[in-house]
Length: 100
Image 1 (cartoon, one colour):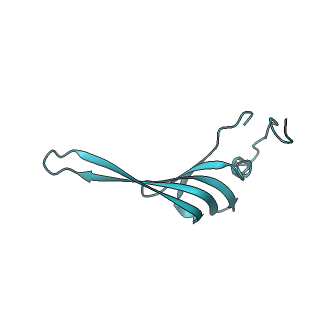
Image 2: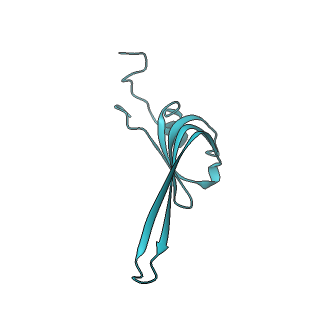
Image 3: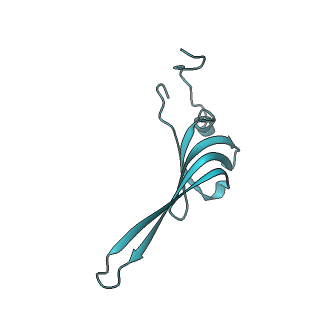
């Protein structure tokens, strides 16, 4: 077993959950129906973040004027490196790991 593998992390403060996710894939839900998945390289107390190998998904809703039904459309793009300003973050989900 590699060093650090399988050890339990204790979350004492909310940002500890993010600290334990450094260099791991995270899911970030943003305002305006944006979702990001990427490797967390850095963050600060304001939830400003730097993500690498990012997949961005943007969901838009259009109204079909004939049927009055909502039509959901998603667009995706890959971004090598991205700075995220923390005031647009709704939630962050760490990768699922054993023992966390």
